[in-house]
Each structure stands twice: as C-alpha cells, then as structure tokens.
Amino acid sequence: MSAEVAQNPSRNFKYSFPTCSNEDILFKLEIPVEIPYAGCTRELVQRVINMFHIPVYLEDDLNEKLADFVTSETKNFHNERDAKLINQLKNSELNVDGIVKNWERMFKENVMEFAEQKGTSDEEVFAAAYHKLVHSPALETILQVENSYAKTVSSMLKNMDEDVQKITERQQAEMEENMRLLNSTVTEDDINELAARHFEEQSLVSGRWGSQLDALRQTQRSQHRAWLMASLDHYSNTTGSNSPLSPLDARQLQPAAAARPPPPPPPRLEESFTIHLGSQLKQTHNVRIVAMDLLDLCRLQPDNPAEDMRRLQTSLGLYSSQLSGAVLLSAGPPAALQRAAAAAPEHHFASLDLQLKEIAEKVKEPAEKRNEQRSKDARRSRHALQTGDVFVTRHSNLADVHVVFHLVADEDALAGDISSRHAVILGLRNILKAACAHDVTTISLPLLLRHDLSEETTAAWCARRAELVLKCVKGFVLEAFGWGGARPATLQVAAPPNTQPQVFAQLAQLLPTIFRVSAPVKAKQPAAQ
Image 1 (cartoon, rainbow, N blue to C red):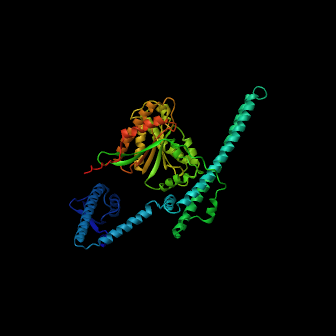
Image 2 (cartoon, one colour):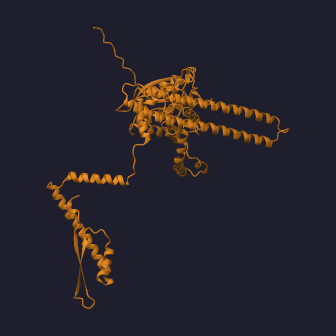
Image 3 (spheres, helix red, strand yellow):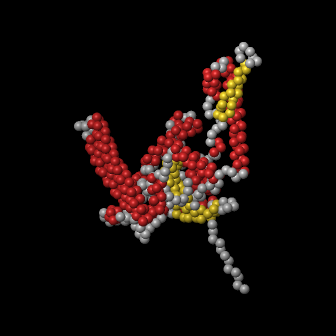
C-alpha cells in the first residue's frame, strides 16, 4: 500500500520474575517481538523457556502476558498506521490512483490464479453467428439448407416406417399361419419361440434404423455448424453478397426429384381479439381462439412450400426476446411430440430424448422429497411427477414454437368439473410465470384442458370449462405484471380440432364477456348549419 508499512516494526517485550532464593531479586527478560506477530505465542513461549532456562511453573503466566502484549501492540500498530495514512490522505500525500491500480492488479492476479477459467463457449459463439446470419440476406439460404436436411431425415424416417411395416406384416402373416396349425403340427413352445424371434428381429431392425438416424443427425449437426461459421466469415468479408453458400453447398441443395406439393389444409375455425388488461396502466394483448391440434404448431412439412414462412418466423425469433411457446398435456412420454421433433435435425439444442432423460434424472430427487412430504401413500410416492407439475423442453426444429411446456395431467381425470384451485390450473399459473420470466411472449394453451372431445363433453360442459380457464388465465396475466419480465403479447387458446362450429361460436362469445375488448371509436358528423 505504501513504503512506510513494507517492513513490520519490532517491539521489546519485558518480563521479570523473582529468584527461588530471594524474592527481592528479579530476573529481567527483554525479548524483541515483530509486530504484527504472525506466529503462535505459545510456541514463542516454549522457545524462550528453553533458551533462557526459565522455570516451567512460569509458563502460564509468561504465555498470558506475552499474548496480552502482542494483542495490545498490534492494536496500537494498526491505530498508528491508520492515523498516519488518514493524515497523508488529508494532506494529499498519497497516490490514490496508484493504490487503486495496485489493488486492481493484485485482484486480477488472484482471480486468474484461483478462479475457474471460463471463456465464451462454443454454444454461445454458434448462437451469435446464427443470430447475425438470420438477420441478414443469408436468411433464405439458411432456410434452404435446413429444409434440405429436414427432407433427408424425413426420407429416412419414411424408409424406416416402410421397412418396419413390411416386417410387421410378414411376422403377422407368419404368426397367423402358425396359430392356424396350433395343436396339429405346431406346439405352444413353437409359438413362444416364434414370438421371441419376432421380437428380437423387431428390436434389431429398430436399433439398426435408430443408429443410422443418430449418425445422420450427428453428421448434419457438425456439417451445419461448420458451414455456418464458414458462411459467417465469408459474409463478413464479402460486401454486397446475398448468399454465403459455396458452390458445393449449392449443389447439395438441388432436390433429387420434384415432389408433388401436398394439398392445402382445410380451413379451421378461428377468431382474434385485441384486449386491454390492467386497472390503471392498461396493456394491450392479442387473444386468438382457434380449433386446432396444438401439435400442428410442432409438426413440420418439408415438402410444403408454405413451411418456409413458418420457419422464417421461428428462425428470426430463436435468439430473441420474443419466443413462442405451447402447452401440451402430458400423462406419459410425449410420443407424438417425439415424432414431430425427429422429423427435422436439431442443430441448436440437445435432442428431445436427451432433454427428457436429463429432466428425468434432475427431477427424481426433489420430486421424491416433495411427494414424501405431501403424502405417505407408497403407491403415490413411486411417481416422480404428479398432476400439475410442469417440465420444459427447448426446440429449434419445430414449426412454430421454441419452448414446449409439458403440463402433467390425465385428460380422463379432467372430464368432470374442476375448481380454480385444481393442480392443473395452478400448473397453468406456473407456466405463465415462467413464460414472463423467460421472454416467451407468444403462448398457446388448450382451452378446455383437453386435446380432443368425446361424447361426454357436451356444449354446456365446454362452456363451463372454457369460462373457468379464461378467467383464471386473465387473473394470471394480470398477476404477471407484478412478476416483471416480458408480458405475453399474444395468447392463443386452442379448442380441440373436432369442435363443432356452433360450440366454437359459443366459446368465442366468452372472450368479449371476460376480457375488455377494444372497439373502434365512432365519430359523429357535425350537423349541417
């Protein structure tokens, strides 16, 4: 800090004790002690006793007085030093900038020596490169490359399905033939052996195709990342270029054969509203009610030219503060979502299977502790997740969403009437809270907490359930204003796709009654004079 305190001063410790023969005669001892003393006073006492042949019965007294001396002198040393430094500071005799720089240097050296060395990860570099390129003229080329990868994966999935179907049909015919000959030339042991052989064959085929798909996805992922980083360098160094592709990449994008475009999807029931929420500072939101399967937001159709526009919006919002999310009811493994996610390669996040595996490992211990606290039922505590729990997966290869909120719920258990304190309703609250905290500004959720309708779901039941969900969501969105973060600008509520038009119209009429819908101001013409 300063030159004055570079070397610690030495103070003399004085100690006297009487002789054994005459108490009036004192032995006087004077020992220099460096202040502040960095060692142990008891150790110093032992050295003094051995060096000067002091009687051992004086050890406790000597140790006590030496410790008091060191404490007192250390306090005086610090007081004198601090007073001197304060006076130097008042008189502008200290180089404050030099002291600050010295502390900064020592802090940096200490951090570099002991802190964990962390730099920008490869994921962060790739994210920055992708975000820069999708907001440039290279966006169209990126979408073409990703679409070509998706077509390759889709073609392999189609071949796998055809291969599995052929094997299944052959095995089914073989099993039927053996069942016909049962008790004549075929025994039950033969049937069991045939079933085991069929199962082994199915497992072998599934494993072979799964290995090929994994290898293809890994190859595409590494090639895509390498191409993207090379494209970024090419695009940064080349002005006026609208495509960062090399000639080799351009040849790879040529389709093998012109595919017939799929027929346009049938028109679906939907209606949109602009609403205002808030008592004093009102916020504007878009609410859309639509009859659709929420999985349609996840499914890609690489052969459909209209998919380019959907992928464009998804790519532009991938690394932004305007993410899109969807709520899917999940009572078990999301097989339909897994199929949709497998149709296109995932270049930015872990695959859905790996994410689910990681979630299962992380949630096991806290969920078991929670379940033990809530219930002593052994059957219930075996389940890691319960109704109303939510887990989240991230995606870049789905059609319209970046985040999927998996709400654990059994649709059959929700067939009856529920209250606003039901676990699934509270799960929706947690979803909206997480969405606001992580920049998910567009969110789609099942209006009736069901993905399809049955004969038991009457029009009156649909109206009651929709009214409950909309009122709860309205309260949760109002509550979200106090949570901070991004507000849900667009809220899409999806009725099951088999909703009848008259029921849909009845559900759509609930929105103006529950929310305050903005209406145009009608100006009256002034009367003619």
